[in-house]
Amino acid sequence: MTTPKIRRVLPFLIAALLMAATAEAVTLKEPFQRTVPLRAGAEVQLSNVNGSVTVEAWDRNEVKIIAEKRVKTGDAEMARKIMEQTRIVVAQDAGGVRIETRIPRRGDGFFDWLFGNQVNVNVTYKLHVPRRAELNLVNVNGALTVTGTRGKARMETTNGGIAITDVEGDLDLGTVNGGIDVLRSSGALRASTTNGSIDAELEDLPSGSDLRFETTNGRVSLRLPRDARLSIDAATTNGRVQSDFAVDGGQPGKRSLQGDINGGGGTLYIRTTNGGVEINEI
Image: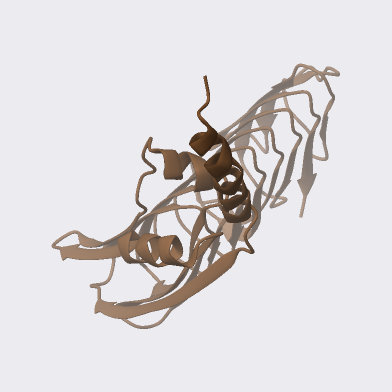
């Protein structure tokens, strides 16, 4: 049974909670910048959560890191605490440089429950890296964009797309809930996505280059050099496979195509569900 004292206090408590829950959002921003040396061909690793990552090549043997931390919540004091606990960690060793975003975890307390849905922590990056640096990028809830590098690259993101422009090297790209776009690039390429399309333009294919494309719920569109030498194995579950190239020894079908392009050479493997396949000459 509720006592008279509790009944008098309860409306004020409820009102206070409602005011806190509906308070105007507070947004804090904090810039981060650092430059570290990096030998030619060394690796740049980056791991991020909640924010886009942009990488551009330059002709210096150093990595310039420009980032911004952003915290948005309904409570100014909480925003300051979360900002203090959100860290960008930069470490170097013989292999290269590692960059990591560390975001505080939410607890199970009452105030965590009250404000949890209103808290947003976001860290965005823009990196300048040596042109021949190798890349190892992992992101969650954000896009990856890379321009101009000349080394191996592995890129993985969830809930975001991948965009590659003017990149040379062995590329391994993967995303969930996002598309993959490759423009004016060259070299071996492996691209995999769920709930997204793949669009790739490769201007040069070294002899024996292997290409592999897999997607679910999306199309695959490729533009390749006219003299590309590849053995093709392409199939889709719901869609059509179309090619500008003559395919020797292949029996084209509506949903599959196998055979050699220009006598064969490297491998072109394509699989998609709920999307068509287009292979065009540049």
